[in-house]
Every structure is written in C-alpha cells, then in structure tokens.
Length: 417
Length: 166
Image 1: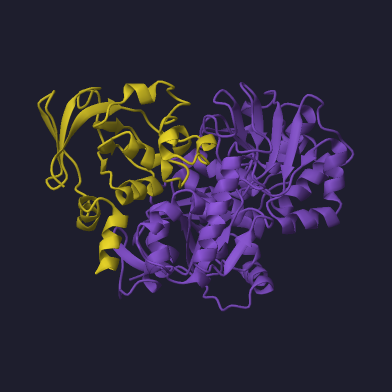
Image 2: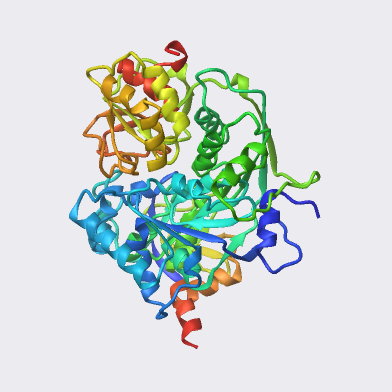
C-alpha cells in the first residue's frame, strides 16, 4: 500500500509488515530528549519502577534550558535532581546548561537525521520534523516508559499534505506561514495528524524548523518536511552518522491537501490568548507595546537575529519599550557576536541574554507585569504565558517584533526594511 | 475498572496546560502546593469550587499546549475521577491514561446533556455515560482495550512495575 512519510517511518520502527492510519503500533525509539522535566516528574515516576538501569544511555539527550542559570532556589534544586539522575544512570549525552535551547542544540549537534523516530519531554519536540524525521512530545510517564523499554505505542496518524508554491517576499518569514496555517486550520484542526510539507526548496533550514516547531499549536503530532540538497548539506556538516531519507509514495493517501502560494503570504500576528487567533498585520498595526521579545525554540536562530539586525541597524528602540533578545543557542550567540549583530542590538538599546527558554514561559529574563503588552517571536500566547495573568502576548515573526520594538507599537516590517 | 460515579463540573473549550498549571508553579517541589494553583488564571476560586470525586466535562481541545504532565497530576491530587471532553490534545490524552485518569471523548454534548452538579455514572467497558440527574444515557467510543487495561492497573507505571518484578 502507498504510504506517507509518517506511515513509512512508523512502519520501519515497528515489527509489523503493514500499517495503516488509525492502527496502534509499538515502535522502537531512536532518541529521546529530556530537559528540566527530568527533575520534575520523570525522576520520581522512574524510581517507582524499581530498576537500576535505562534501556540505552547512548540514546538519551539530556539538556537544561528552561530555567538557566537557575533564577530561584526551587529551580536550582530541580537542576540538582536532574544531574543526580543523569549521573546515576550514566547518561552519555549530558549536555549541561550552557549550550542553549533543546530544540536548537539537538539539531546543531547532528542528533536529528532523516528517517529517525524521536520523542522528547517537550511539546515542541515536533521541531525536528524539519530534518525529515518523525518527532513529537510526550509527558513524564511516557518518558519513563521509553527510558525503561526503548519502546512506545503510537496511533498511526492520518496525514495532511501541505504544498508550498513560489517564494516569500522581503520582510516575510516562515513564522508568517505557520501562523497563517494555524489561523486557517485552527488550534484543533490537526489534532493527532501528521502535517507533511512539500514544495520546501525555497525555505531555509532555520525557517523549516520554525514551521515544524509550531505544528503542535494546530494540535499536530508530527510536522515533517521532505528532504532536499539543502537538508543533506546541513546534516553532513553536523553528523557522520548514516541517515535514511524518506519520501512519500506518489499514491500516498492524505486526509487533506492544502496549498499556499508563498508570494501571497503577508505578516501575520496571533492576538491574545491563542496561537490560532490570527490576523493579518493590517488589523493589529498601531497597538502599543511595553516589551518586544525575540528568541525561543521558535525564532531565536541566526536567520532571525540577522533580519533583526538588518532592521535595527542605525536605529534605536522606542524609549518606552523594552527589547529582549535571547539567541536560541550558544552557537547562534557566537555567530551573532562574530557577525557584529550583538553590537547593533546593544547599541540600539536591546538587552541580549544568554540562551534559555526563560521569557517564553514567563520563567525569568523578561517576565511581564500586570496589564503589560508584549509582541513576541515565541509560540504561545496563552493567558499568563509570559507572566501576569492580565498581561497580553501577540505572536509574530522576528521581523515584525523588531519593527515594533523601534516604534513601540505593532508595526509592519515591510515599512522599515 | 468498575463504574465511575461523580458529579459533573463544567469547563469550556481550549482549556490549555498553562491554564491548568501556570509555569510559575512548575518548579514547586510539592505537587500538592502546585495543585492549589490549578486553573488560577482563569478562575482563582476553582480549587475551592471543586470537590473530590468530581467528573470534569469540557469542550474541545482540552489540555492543548505543553507536555507538562503536572497538568494531569493536579487533577489526580484534587480527586477528579474522569475527564469527558469533545476532544483532547494528543499529549494530554496520553498523560491522562498514563497517570490513570480516564479520558473520554464525546464529540457532541450540550447543556441538555450535562449541567454542573449532574450525577454521572460512567461505564468504560460498555462505553456509556448515565446521567442520573437527567435520566439520560449517552454512548461514547470505547477506549482501545490496551488503554482500558492501563487504567485498570492504575496507570502505566504500575503496569510496567509488575512486568519488571516478574
């Protein structure tokens, strides 16, 4: 039977000869990513099992990123619990707290490759779909199951084919594409589905990661891109491991097929308090902001910082507005430093922080006070997501966030580029 | 699992994980402290209004957002016996079953089907919710057998523990 990418990868990781959507299958996991959740519920649940080993310490990627460096005593204690567990079970890929945000660092280190099946203790684990692999988020107990057995059950998902035509115009970014898609299909439109992206050649790897990252905001289980030369070059620079490119069959069956002409995409903004509450920029322009935030696993990559620097060069942040910039990883940070981007940011009045999930989750490094308004390059704008329950978050592209920081109100980046 | 009995507590659409456990609670060391903050941003009185043994009846896309299993565990601590929703976010549904709380998908319901305080009896084996207050029987798609088994064993950790102890 003809198959989608998701069906092929799940089949290859099962011991079955045939699978079809709706079926439950048990699959072998190639890699599992864990962060601070390890010191939250995971270690407590795992210790209940009464075993003194993990299935494969070489297939666990452990990193600290949400609250680094620890802003509170309780966060510090959580980190201690994480480290104790990682040492007890001899984790080999114990990445530490200085490298950056999990979904940026794991691909940078070459751990996400075509054909793999990856899970992680974070809903935005879907990000690795940009690398032609299947990856998705799971909770603490599922993590314990994988630690103990290396296996997990999956429901084989139906797939949506999303085909891109043409190229993005100046000032428009892949964030605008994924916001447009979420606005169209709604936050529940893809629950349990695999989104399969075709027509990807014009998109950068950074941009693909942004799209895969946010498919979960539409409820999707996977957001998988096809492969091309751009991806293979990227992988070969970062990993010597073999990989297995997966193409869908020509006759593969899709529950839905959507097509987007990228040249028609305009800057999009998700209003409070749902990533699905999406409008074209023209409907939100002029809304005053207290803070602009550029960073996170969605949009803290070098491409994002480059466009921000391009917009900011020779200009200043509005004196009533705070602009916080958090590179997604140390690698991105160093690149930005070498390219002179950090000088531009700091001279314009922005605050540049080390790499962390901090501001995005209202943890630290940019928490919002009562009634404050923030435009943010992150992925969620739920009530109280970045701080006080009465604060409001507008989600937008790095270009829109930066343009807005200059004027202190939501601004179309095409006006300043 | 025997029949589950409890009184309905109604919630709306798109209740997300950050609503259920705001991120400022996530580094709390004591899960019971965290449970005191459940849904505080959308209803500061929620914890006072809920009773042990309530069954939550919610709208679409329940549990959307983060993978944080705390968003299931706080309901376990508060004594919620089951959650009925028009649809569940994928990770949240898995977390419910894994922790041992039945998640029941009922595509359609309205105020004629359930209201706050209705006395409900759920049979997972039969796939039926009996609303005793309204004298109404509603059928739902039964869970796959392997998931019912996880629930019967009190969650997947208990199930796995038994396997390892053999």
